[in-house]
Image 1 (cartoon, rainbow, N blue to C red):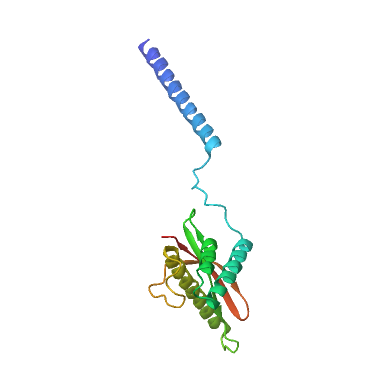
Image 2 (cartoon, rainbow, N blue to C red; image 1 turned 90 degrees about the vertical axis):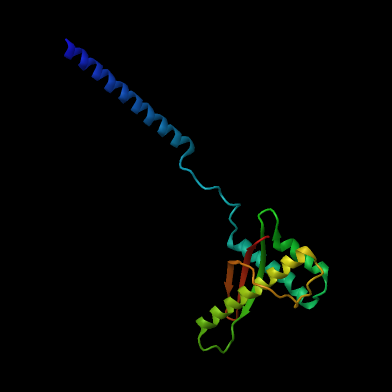
Length: 171
């Protein structure tokens, strides 16, 4: 009799553990259906290559007049309005590097042009950061300092030049 009672309790205990386990699995599966896996927060909408290309052209068309009229603060302000995104905390600039037409090694010349384009864009970023503080100084062609940390987010290579769009943190 005692053995029979012990067997009933053991069976009840096993059933209880089984029911708890099934409920646990059921609610675990339910949670996965609703939320699924944990995903990192999405960045702002990813820009297409066409959008980046268009922005690069727009920045270049705003940078060129500054080269022609380096003291014009209105041109600087127009460039700042396009190059700076306060909400996403970035600043962007375009740079250009020329590929020598008589280069014996096109691959090496293209890499050099890309580096030159990157440095050109970083120089523009340095000006833009300074012009955010005061659009009248420094004069174009008169900046000195370190190259700001930046990354290339768009690149276009042509037979005679490389154009890049560079992004840096806005600080």
